[in-house]
Length: 104
Image 1 (cartoon, rainbow, N blue to C red):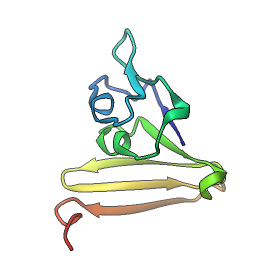
Image 2 (cartoon, rainbow, N blue to C red):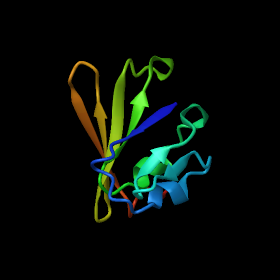
Image 3 (cartoon, helix red, strand yellow):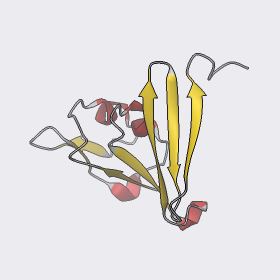
């Protein structure tokens, strides 16, 4: 599993660092988030869901059928948008209503 953090998009809020259950993220001297231990990433996507700017992208490697695509999230109020960017250039968006996400 692997994530990439775009340093230009990172706003140094530290929410991704705080939420990471594997403690693989850190903050640089400038306050920007970075991946301390990429090979230890569990792929839980907690950091993606916490990032308000979409600075964190999750690489969809061949081992999980991604063939080099990636995904990232954006949040607008109670809506969470999952953007899947396929290697052929196709983009897919899945919308999750946060007020209904845990209803059975």
